[in-house]
Amino acid sequence: MMAPAAATVIVSGRLANPQATVPTGVGAVADTAPTAALIDPAPGLTLKVGQSIAPLARGLDDFAVKSAQLLVDGTPVASSAVPPYAFSWTPSSAYAGTTVSLSTVVTDSSGQSTTSAPVPVSVSREPVVPVITTAPPATLPAGASAAGVVKLKGKGTATLSVAVNTVGTLTVSGPKVVTRTVASTGASTVTLPVKATKKFRKKLARKGKLTVDVQVTFTAASGGTVTTTQEIVLVEKHPHKKK
Image (cartoon, rainbow, N blue to C red; front, side, top):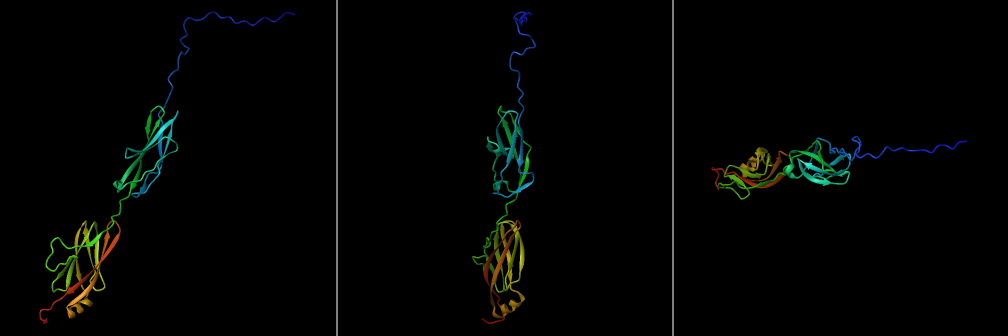
């Protein structure tokens, strides 16, 4: 029985130069830009001034995400390098009555950046806190008092000057006076007539003097109501009566 032949490898010789089809180095590695999205809040959210929200960004990359930024109207306001990319934003009074655009910029490990689609968020107007003060007119006529009450001498009526800080309506009322409403067009001084009701005009005519408590209510157009009170003495004189 014959022994099996030994295996052999025949090498024709070492090539002096590498073959053209054999790679000799590392080729270009594909590295795409990251994807970016602001997944919270949802479009159309309405905030009040001072109300905080927590925007949440999502960033994906084929290698690694380096960081994400929160943009408000295109301006960076916060940054995070740790997922989940959560932020906090609180609108100031400067944004009152506007629609703000929120977005995120995601940057990958190679420095490529992608900006997400904007998410519109509305900030409601701040309600104007109504302010009302009884104040004298700029020029005080005869009979005017420091509280802004101008008594129409001998007529049994008076006018009350009231300073307000915004647009709204003023109502003067009281158990003894005729209710009147006057509009204010902005921060100004408004004059309100004060006149006794028919029932108390008889008493005023009989006694010549009537003390009335007047309540002035100011309702701002943007919401909110404030009141103030004033005591006024109405005087009615009759020429035919002896002093």
